[in-house]
Image 1: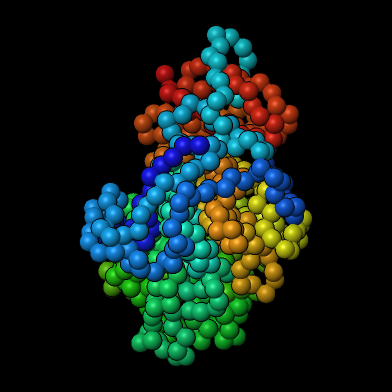
Image 2: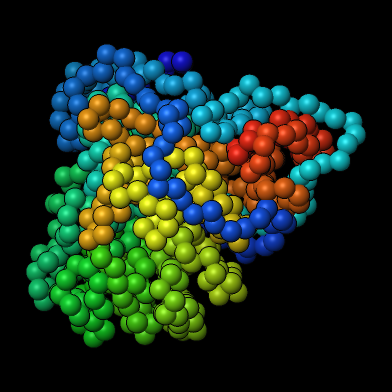
Length: 551
């Protein structure tokens, strides 16, 4: 076990304003055309297990001498005084203490080789042997250059913030470090819900005053309770974090059914103008909180009506919103946030998503404002329809697992090794498909993992909070993301691979990163990378990450 000193989250929240005010707004798009990355391994999804996690599959982060449970109230218990953001706690704040981090969560780079398998995640004691001869099982070719990479990220939610608040201040900070810190996932992006997501505490929007087209009743006061403190704490841990936002539903009075769940967006000009103002006010009000929103997706899954906050949009309504209302309003209000068409999914088989893509990309007025595209986990088949635009493409909602129509545990999210295997397949296939960024859905949930949908659907997360024991648990899927995100820098390029099941990147500093997966028994593997042939022992049903310099 290694010991690291951590600042208390409540002290950090007291310093957040200064930290956020220095947060620079940059171009998050990662512009550039996607190209071929060579063979990425076999495609296909393995589904997900409904079985509970086997013992030893998760690591528990425990606090030594942790203080009282944190409340996530900005400034609450933080004391007075000030300190330099990111370096000093304010005087009189809660003590940060020492956090004992499990041996399976060691520091990330600089490392040459890391391996993971069931019950043995993130092992750094493997050996790389350079060979003078032999046939490579996997070859990395940095002459085959594909799309630029901008980063990994995840979604903020009220329930995540609430679960995090159960932990001690030290464990709260440990969780943020695991997600955003240099010794963790190094996530560089975060998704913010506009109003209630499926993991809000309950259903709401930011203006439920019927007919309030002037947004006189617009308010983010609800968000200040659990959501904004969580986001500010993340920004304090990672000041360069890029944030984007999307609504799960417009205000109910803008919809055909006047309800939070399902329904269709009204298409009259007055409603679309009011909704454009709604999104504009959101960006403006969050900016006042020191939270810059760099990208807005007008609607999450606009082709689906679901049993949680959601809304179906017609292709004509979305096209008219972007070109006739939202784009011009952002310009008039000097809102710098970019507009992406997203987040799209094809799992309803209606063809609505492809129809929307065709309508928007065929409309020159709308495309003057569209700067990228976002897709949900079942939208892989739609990528080909947007590649001709040359705009950035994000996979912005990872498969949550424990699927009700597959292997299913209705009691609690499995968070097991099988979900880690499924996660790898989705990440691999989407990156091979040409996306520039990849987002998990739930960064942190409690161990049950149930949202507000009518269907009780316990969903997996990367970190889990056991509310009864107040423990922070690191799940197997966390390590799958970490095998990539801990080594691949923003500005990297996806490069070619052949043989085996692998992804590869070339970082801006010239280092080459390859992530290998072995679905069978443990075996010796030879990788040709950076002008060398390196031999390693691949674990059974596991991963290996190699970082090397290119000769």
